[in-house]
Length: 387
Image 1 (tube, rainbow, N blue to C red):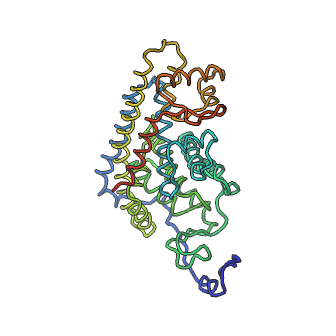
Image 2 (cartoon, rainbow, N blue to C red):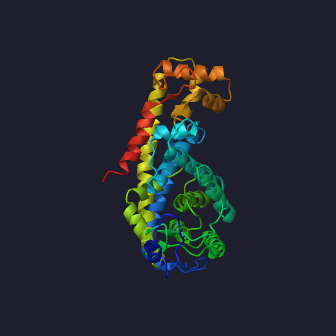
């Protein structure tokens, strides 16, 4: 019997009552996936492309470069934005940066900022992708999402479904497994992710699809599942230095991505493997271009600073503009481990030569931004939706 929500008529309740079928996923810990060998060559090419992308980031910036860390941070934010956009949570680069300064009132920006925290947790925990790591990723995600905090880091204890009405699972396009199956299914998934007899990207694609089929949380399954992808890419040694924009590749064709998840739930794993192969190649190509464009902005800014003495605080702040294209005095003081006075001097030095501009127009709580970096990030995000 459908539950009364206080807003539905008796007729709606009657239509929502009756039998339904919820998913009972096949356990995959020891499953033979040799049927996917037909995709092996394409998957190998995709992995090679990701490795070259990672090498390009190191080569373009250098292991000892102070820019490598900030570049990795902004690519992680870009990936978080794309992953969120798959869930129709859209935000511009400036609003996301403002949210990280607690200066944005945009609900989407706050939610995407929380997704950044989930992605960061995924990379931090990549050496042990287990039940606790999955719960931590989800906790970081929903703790920062207003209204959902009490679900953060907790497997669901209720039925969830996709499509149809919120009143009943009848007619839904997908009804997740009953909640009492979640613990054993997650244990099986963790065991599967520990295997070393599968091509890595095949393993990652299947792990992601299995996670989405389990749908272990009330909300945030898609974003947590895509954070899991990056934990595995880092843990398996494919992308070690930065974050490849794989979700951007999935965002290019969400219809095919969702269709491949449905195919997996119906017993066909090949489409999701192919989707991840395509997304990985796109991530490597577009990510390389993004690194080069951001690097060019930084090079141009360096040229503009040439008149400053080498000891000027602005030089120390310059690399951080990649990961923080919007800054305030407090952030700069924290980044440079310096006083508020020295932080303000660094911002004024950058502003005096046109590297950053003050856009708040306020005497207090002022905000400075690098227009070129913000433009590159917004152009990249916009290109993902252009057919």
